[in-house]
Length: 139
Picture (cartoon, rainbow, N blue to C red):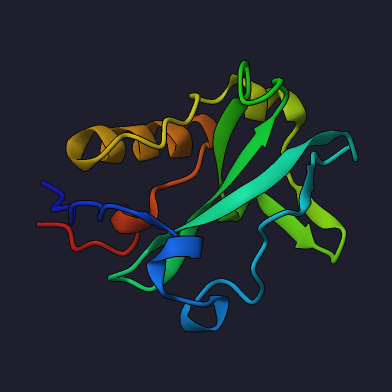
């Protein structure tokens, strides 16, 4: 049986009181940067970075695209592990745009078990083990 530590509720970097320097896996604030897939196709813009304020790490960037005056806007979370490189102009993923657009839509209003389930679904869509399950002891 594998014991897993429950995922923490994540907060937006912009309202967490933290800076990228406080986080173990982030050097710069990525907000406002354009996101490109592995082929260089534009996907959207980073709205914010979600952070685990207990573990001091950033598991996701929150990306949006499309819509008019907020209507029809698409929002997705992208695990930081799916980012290949970061430049001043943008983030370049190691995945294709179709994977991002087919990933579960992000709803900022989720919390508790619903949020944790959503985060797990996003990691699953990308084929990445959730950070809270890495290195957990097996009993």
